[in-house]
Image (cartoon, rainbow, N blue to C red; front, side, top):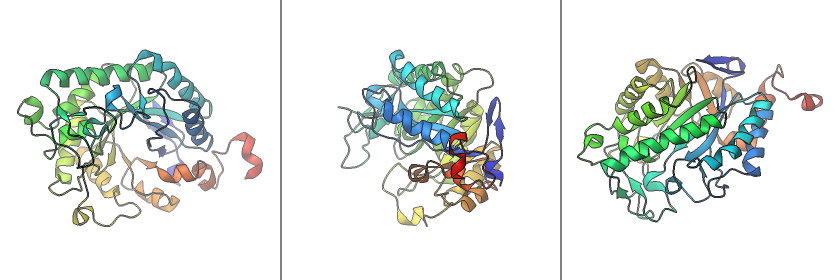
Length: 332
């Protein structure tokens, strides 16, 4: 099966095409990962996953979804992440980390910030719009978090531009009514973040962005705008795109359509073809046949909740048993 074959992009060499999607664990202390994270990520490496993306890791304390989310806003946090990265490497997997800011979805921030002062819903606080100066300061925070991630030893970085978080808030007319340069060009904030992060990463290290190719809420943008954003992000310097959708508001059932195995794969296919860039596909690809089929439209396949249920998904589905840990061979 193609899904269990190696893949290379720039200097990143993966033993298979299975990606562990970033999934918040809400278990950090002051932004620091702990034993839970160490075991959580190492277990998936033992289970055979080729490429592990560490969950949403935020560039400042008020950028967290909750106060129990991870952060890389100070140098003291580097060593805790390094221990996880080293452990994952020891078991044959490569590591990325998703650097992010929740923006208006930062539930525990006293006053969240965003592109504009539009709140997510009645259950969320009304955010304060960042000044132009503060936007540039935020871009620098992304750069510094990327530097720390590289010092921790990651093999790649993924910028979080999806699911209604800060970069997505700048990328959408639903959440961006600014009148400065960051309102005139909805891709500008994302592009500036990419360019700043590129300044930190070594030659040969691939940079990804996760983006929502389509919005599901009423009056949300369609795939054509997603393709436009992908083109702009590619031009700014990303090497591959993790294609997701939604997250910016209550979904309109008509816009959402049928949710089932592979339901977002067509978005990855469209961006791959129109933008000519490698993509990661997502969308309930729990069955190995669905994951394999997704590779007709994408270069890598990301698994999420199924890896919470079965950390050994890769080892259990590869009939050649290439990814079984030596210590577990008797079980196969």
